[in-house]
Length: 113
Length: 115
Image 1 (cartoon, rainbow over the protein chains, first blue to last red):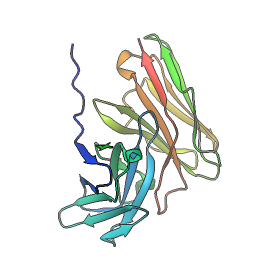
Image 2 (cartoon, rainbow over the protein chains, first blue to last red; image 1 turned 180 degrees about the horizontal axis):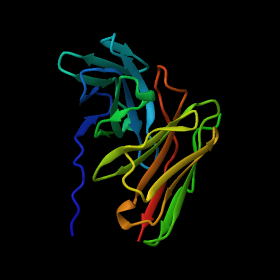
Image 3 (cartoon, helix red, strand yellow; image 1 turned 90 degrees about the vertical axis):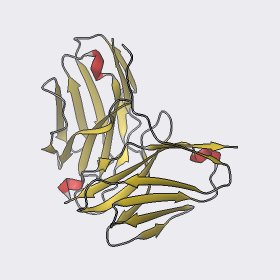
Image 4 (cartoon, each protein chain N blue to C red; image 1 turned 180 degrees about the vertical axis):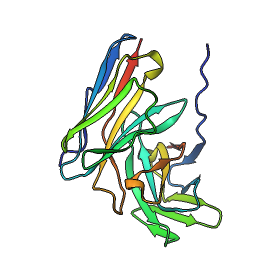
């Protein structure tokens, strides 16, 4: 029979534009968040993290924003490049739990040259 | 530095056969995680260890799945007997431990196909 898979949200941007990828997390008690990037055929790769006592953190070309009021996380990528094409996952940790992370379903970013 | 090492990278087996996936975490990391990724269910945590001790195996699908970590540098995930629905990419990840930051470093994955 035909299988039904996850329909990942997809974001398509032009090279050079800024990208914003959004994530709604599940637990209001979560105190630590990570963004991962997964390229085709590879394992997820760490991009940036943020703790719940912050609302913004910047890295190289990336910024993560945290809005605890509405349990929302976003990843902004400046001057998006073709190499940024990948699936992006947010992950959360709450109550420590030995460093356990709960991953979201992911967003596929496609960069058009 | 070597990252997380997984073997084999690809495995094709017939239904009913035993499958063993292997993982070598990053040296000095105290926590190890096994994940399964499928189109249907996304990235799922199966089990994780801290200091070689299983902490949470609530994600293990059923008794056909078992995982061990005999020492700090090696872990196995075994499926016996395997079924077609076990076909997925299995990732191993390691982290420094239970304290912040909780960044996990992922291996390249093992693509398992059960026919």
